Length: 494
Image 1 (cartoon, helix red, strand yellow):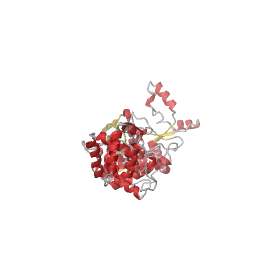
Image 2 (spheres, helix red, strand yellow):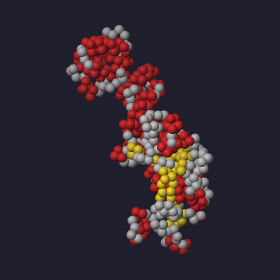
Image 3 (cartoon, one colour):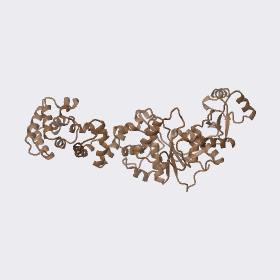
Image 4 (cartoon, one colour):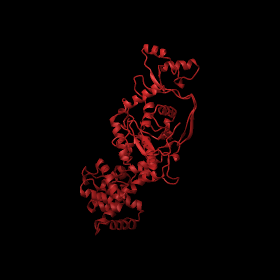
């Protein structure tokens, strides 16, 4: 088996089918191919496998582009970029497949097969074999007369690849040496009876024509590898391929109960995380940990650091489980690391979407956000968490009311002495600053009433911000202003 020469430029590829919404396992595959190409100074080819008209859609195609753009995963060749091996959508490459099929058929690498599934099953049973073994290679040596007779019966053949009568082995970049015994893989169908080429043909053909050197993909595709290796060898014999690429099969991403994370699993929907307010840096960082690590004692890193350290041989062969809590924790770390101005820019769309800010915020509203942002940023897990935390600064006074649960828990009869003392202390405050507010409330509530801090300040927090969790209390009251603060404290006073 001929493999790429050591001096050949590395060419990896990401080739999804445009079906449904991009899911985290698919994007993890894109990320690892991207990191591998960038680490090695190679090229990443983005190819769309859209030959299944019944399942593929333009909406899903554009969703894939949107997902990669959001995350900042770029590609060197493919849609919207171009390249010398285009087009990069399989639906636009039919003429190339037809030419390759002709070459393979003329060379005897493909043969006509007329057997139906029912006939194969009957032959297996008659021979005392398990029907699940599949096709029995019975049509390999049909004579011209037999094929003519079958055609006369109105039967149309599929085209199958003649598998070699030997074991097929290769060295997986992640799993090491793998071998499939001779006869364990039936001759696969590459072209339907209607002439339509199948994935089993077009995927390796495109890899060959685009000179892909490394195929990094999910372990669920491992059983198809011997068929693909056999096809690459046939393609080399007919002058279509130069070599058989290296393979690396990455661990599947699993969800709850250690089950494979499927497209239908809500936890797999990439855009659900974007909608919640995951930032690209956090999402990519967590996806990178699904089968790889930068160091045993380190979980937080940038994509530049990942590229510098990425080694495909260090990708684990063990299943990777998607842990939402860990993903959230990593995202929170990246949120905290953002410069304040960057954080503000990113959070504004979520505040607009939640109705906290109007579609076009005023300069005053943005100035308030600039002031509160550093305090909020430290407390968020995702960007959408900011909306309930800062709403108290923007809501009209006639519409403001503490959250029901918070009010029931904190603003009962026991809160009256606290609110009375707070109002009295704040009414005569000569200057409305964080430091002055802090000193006045501590003097009135801790020194004056002898309360513990939690008991002292909880009623003030809920009365003024509407929640038990808010930005720091004294800073919040300064931003809210004297009039609003006192109005809310009086309104909440039972």
